[in-house]
Length: 73
Image 1 (cartoon, rainbow, N blue to C red):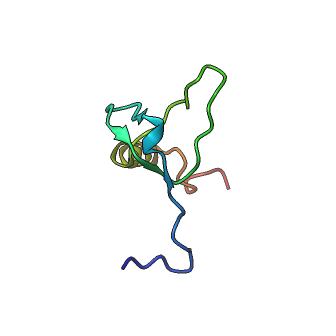
Image 2: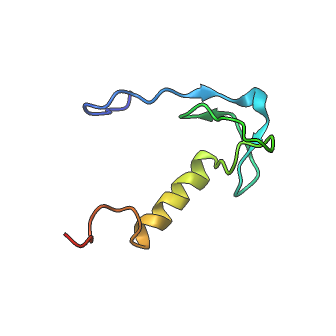
Image 3: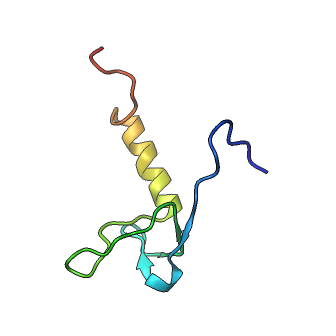
């Protein structure tokens, strides 16, 4: 069992019936931590699989985006 500290486990949504593909690698996304909403063009926008999302987050962190530290204050 994972230790989430004081944070409860994130609710995951089964999206396997929606036929959503990862915008990066093309693998089918079966579960998301949010319920996607369909856009006017019939797509769900750019959605990434767990592995690609982790890589993207690490890339942002390494490039200085979104880290919370290194700001002006």
